[in-house]
Image (cartoon, rainbow, N blue to C red):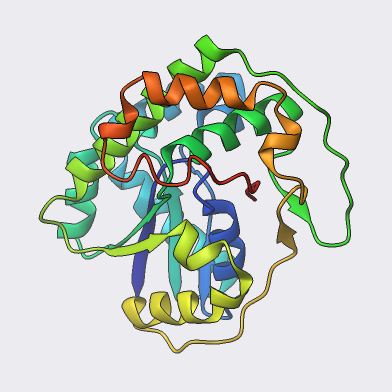
Length: 248
């Protein structure tokens, strides 16, 4: 039986990837099982414990969900801030035979902007057949800078955790942004997990087709914040700043 984890940062297409994997007849993939906000307040002290000693809970969830779904492969997605020591957790999972899928996004600017827009509009994802007209919003530059710093630090944590750890890299812009790439992407993941590939589908889509420049009234100001913040000197961060396409 194969266990796996989708390890990365938010707004990299993780919900889309989970949805596609769950449509495979042999794969059960959960969302963020250690996200504090999904638990009722009386249970949160227990979640704090799991965040510090998570591996027994991972095993419990894998056994529980295999029994419920009757699927042989189990996985979930994990963000660095959801555990106290992400590098130690990832390395322990790898040592115990878990497969690691590293999901990332090339553009730090677009990733952070995607989170800011979603947080303000409350539209994190769209669904096929549902048309949404986005409002025009203004994003606070200081809050955006703080989000850039936080996202950059999380990406650095991922890089550190995965150093010398065997894993499969999935890049949102290359592998998930275009639906025409989904078959090849899921086929590669299935090969990595040791399961036969199968057709997959999802109802998830981008919340709207309008580019961010049309949604965010101070888009150019945020680009300036990014450039003046020194992020252009970080690996891959400069790529995609001029891109204005919204993200699922």
